[in-house]
Length: 393
Image 1 (cartoon, rainbow, N blue to C red):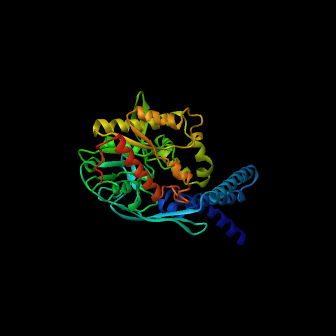
Image 2: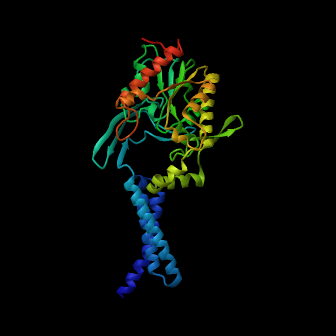
Image 3: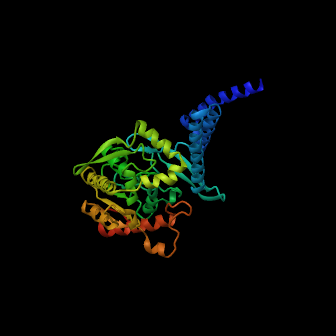
């Protein structure tokens, strides 16, 4: 009798495990609450196969044992990958980044958003800051408000991830100027030339930019090519552009349907992030070419539609990054200049050589000091090469 009850319980365990796996895979809030949920699903799959194998005999049992061995191997690989990743926790007020049509994502509403990043292995705080998002769903920049702003487009370096409002690059730049010069910060985490161009094409922020902007600024580095090629893990909803002869063409979001589901599924696996993603996201010649062309189209549209020049503060990368692509840092700079952009080297090489703290330790985003130095560099370059653009003190 006891043996029959035990057998029934084991048989019942199979649908129970299947339901648990389905819930974890399909229900988004559970995935967010369980940081290691992919490992949990692998373990559940392993237990499911083991349970099924215990109920079989002969060749089918041998087959299930092989599958159980594979599942166990996946569990081990996932566990190793979890241990290999930086042990960090990032908690930001809910709603600071939500799905946004056309550009992929951005702030969900105005307000103050608290963000804290912690090294969970030591308990040390990496940063503990507040982001103020204004009524236009942009990071706030204190100063003059006019229809002739200097407009910063860009990614988390421009947005100011890890620093308070007063220490972002656009705010530091505004602080150097006179009281009549307006500065806007259109940057946000994970953006690239894709968002810069799409914002121009759709006129998403035209009302905020006004009728007579003075200058567009877009800080970039070659690793933006991983984003414009839709290879970066978080770019599923980003705007996708393809090469179309001598131009680029908008094709909708990077991923949709089954491809979107697969990207999300893989992206939630530490094993994929640690071992596979660096291989799949490695840039090729066409990826760099697309990146250049998307950015140059944004430069062209800035001139044609808005009547303003574009300044590109360029962050050089290691030349090894371009291995096999046929490009170099200087080749990119030359292409940008040939396409009508103003380009300056924003690497702060001398300051880095002197050991100044330019990157947030344990994070990599620019420190307040780096933003102040780059703001001064920008102002000096603009005064020398674009006279009359700035209203200086």
